[in-house]
Image 1 (tube, rainbow, N blue to C red):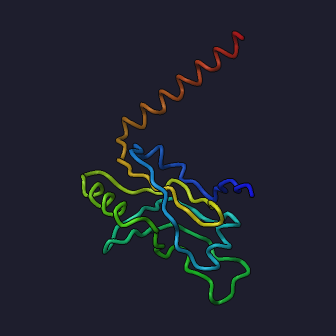
Image 2: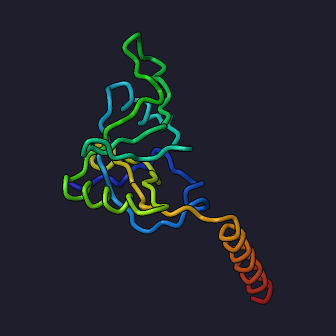
Image 3: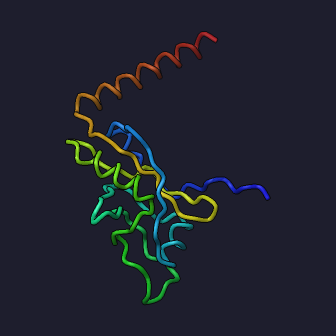
Length: 153
């Protein structure tokens, strides 16, 4: 049977603008029933979310998953901390790296892979304002080159 493709639920578009992405990791996401249904409907937001390591466990903070519309009183809390699943050795390696100054764990996207909710985490370093300006200038220059090439062809 053919594997179904990954279905992206939401992306953190600002992350690549705000941070230098050093490494990416895949982690499983522990969810409640109504959260899964909301995610499948695409009702999630990664803005201002981050991952934290507490007591040897990885937690995703500030991720907003809208309450399920057909849910009853057992619906979930939208911004509750959600546990992430990774191997203990990976968590310890990340813990060591996040102790360095300026490094953080930022979720890049949430997606379904083989029916399971996953988060793409990035080990990231914050950009300064001048770095952001440099990126914008490079992007504009590339656009100008592409426009010029299209005009000649």
